[in-house]
Image (tube, helix red, strand yellow):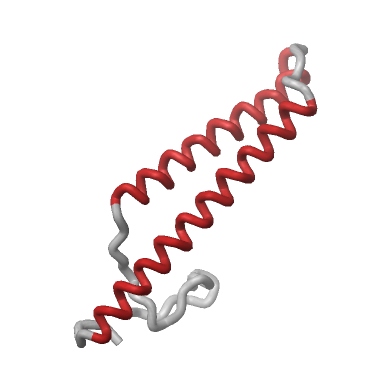
Length: 105
């Protein structure tokens, strides 16, 4: 694997990790759906916060806005947990491949 510039280096990986990993397509679909949901909730929150100044209509209210922000946080926490799980599975596959003598290290 080629050395990356320190400003573009991925701080979550180490030099001995595989550049590519096998991930189940179901997990990618889960992350995609969660990302779409977070983006949709963020748009609703943005509209709620900016609508009074833009059109004079009422906001959804502080309670709803806080709930939307909490939902976005929970979705991002879910995405983080799922990507960590995918990374762990990929590390196990890579470790197994190395023990069989097919690793890149």
